[in-house]
Length: 422
Ligand code: ATP
Ligand code: MG
Image 1 (cartoon, rainbow, N blue to C red):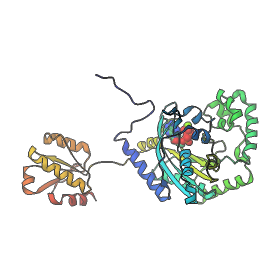
Image 2: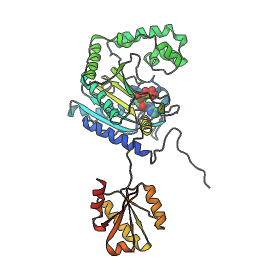
Image 3: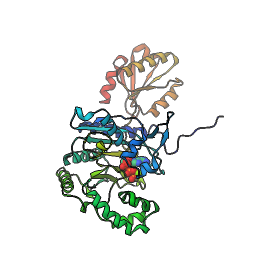
Image 4: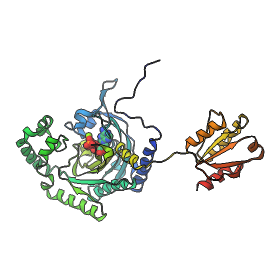
């Protein structure tokens, strides 16, 4: 026997029946994005490495140690996307979308790649869906995106997901805050993990995001960014909260939540699940405003805000609550004998062409084994075709979950099915 080849560590196969949970999530998500007027974009999985270095930031965990980066055959440095905001911005700039429309609302959904330590809800290929809005610096845009995230989660019937909100200031007030944060962290340098000791001078905000309990203890006493906001940032933050209050969106302000990417300005937020299904990984999504990113990547000065949610984690929660989009056939057609097989095959094809979900056993075999397979398929009804049915043009529609069979004319089978499934 040849040697077996395994899948890549941390990269999951999504198979039936679990895929039904994903279909449920994707259908609800697309529906929600549609209601909010967001349109789908699909960008490539590979991008120029510089795109992520310049946007996500060199000092972040993502770029510093989690990216899949390699040289292609022509010696270009490429990276598998670790997130989709930067690729979407690149596409926005490259296609000069701002020339065509003042406000652009996009969504995406797809696999992302990060070389991480794996555990429940943390993989090396994982899925994110996200919404991005370009062209408006107004607090209403932040609030709309948050509302979109909340309505999406609500539509999934997931209880126990809460919203944390913060403002990270902008280029006017951030420097002074960083100075006071750095001074505080320097005073506690010996209590920080080795990595944070190094980060402290280059990118002190990252220390706030460190998951090491020692660092978190230090961070708990750090100056709060919300106390250091300039007047315009303060006003923006208040207006976002006012809008959220107006739609009764519950949130808590967490002044130490900074998110793991460098490009955020002003509003930052996270959707957090308190669920044992997720083990220690509790963030199901997060986002914020990134008013400078489009320009920093060589585009026009266009403000933007967005969020991303982890679909693997949402699916873990959905699986626990039993939500899925079932893909069961309406009807299973069995052939009682070899003579009926051709007619059964023809009938299955015809019903499928007219829109019905119909199954049969391509192996043929005994009626008993076909009926076993019918039960396993989860079909609502079964129909057996034999000599008698072929001669009379009548058949029996048998409900597989129990109940009375009904006689129907085979040439009205489609209509009979539709009537019973309604
Ligand atoms: P975490 O703090 O859990 O590492 P993060 O801040 O790195 O999350 P983001 O970059 O904000 O995550 O991505 C948004 C969402 O994507 C997260 O809230 C999470 O649900 C999901 N996500 C991030 N990394 C992974 C991963 N390795 N496996 C599965 N889901 C992930
Ligand atoms: Mg992470």
